[in-house]
Image (cartoon, rainbow, N blue to C red; front, side, top):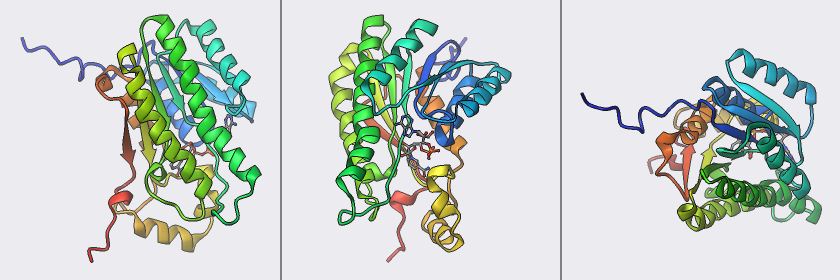
Length: 265
Ligand code: NAD
């Protein structure tokens, strides 16, 4: 009888331990729900709104998964280490680290203050860098290796004028994944970026609350609309499973075609 190749038989995330930073809203929340419903044990990192985390833990339980919440600020290295340590204390290992937490200032090169710059870098680049380092050390020491998934953006490669620090940080994450992915491939740790296009989450409230701007954005997207967070979570769920075992040091975009958009001129 023909055997199902492992890559097709491996969509279950049963008993995989998955840490999601910024996990109680937007894309992070959808990732927690998605991987939780596929049987993962989820560690939900959050910075604020513990009540949302409690609701989410209950929801994951109803979906058949198991989760805990850890309040940790990814811009603080001691918090990041505590996040990793708590995951291991509770579940014994980390299979997947999803670096999802992110912020933006929507400022240009001319109007970005040093404080704005540091704020964005500390969360979107320094936080991802050291979360990758700490998670990778754990994955190597536990012997089974693991996977790091960085929620980057189309803006790791595609400019967004008037959001310069954000683009610079995401560009850094692009090269972090490529370089660290090569460094760690022989040690059983793979790293992949997921680059969403425009997703309907709180980070985009200002655009979604401006009908004219929203219409302009939708018109620029070949698929014609923003993504729902679940459409990014499903990519992360695939990448978390054994079916993505040969992917590393690269980026996967789920952007409705926006990076390839062309007026046909
Ligand atoms: P969101 O604002 O709902 O989520 C961001 C989360 O990060 C929030 O839960 C927030 O509390 C958390 N966070 C911020 N600073 C933190 C810190 N210091 N420590 C811990 N958590 C912190 O927005 P989202 O759209 O869900 O964003 C998730 C990720 O997706 C971000 O990295 C963002 O850059 C990326 N992204 C979003 C879009 C989009 O259009 N929404 C597109 C591309 C990439």
